[in-house]
Length: 116
Image (cartoon, rainbow, N blue to C red; front, top):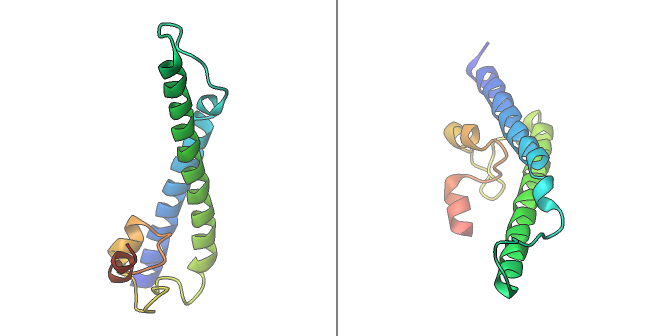
């Protein structure tokens, strides 16, 4: 097994980890995405606003988890492509450490930093 094969296997393992985390979060957060419930120990408009804010934050986190699953699926498709691991902007290779941290990344560190 050469270095490229070892890296590919490590990337697959990392993608599996990311996917599992996102799926677990979605499964665990099903209850939090329900209707807004008021805290009976608190009264007034602020408690309702707090509950609505908590629900909005939960929904945003669930949306991020869904987007993560989409990025993982796209990365799995690209993994067999000769373009996988090349920056979308400059076409230079993305550092292996960056790919291992986030195998769904599309850009090298320089191009990603320039976009922010």
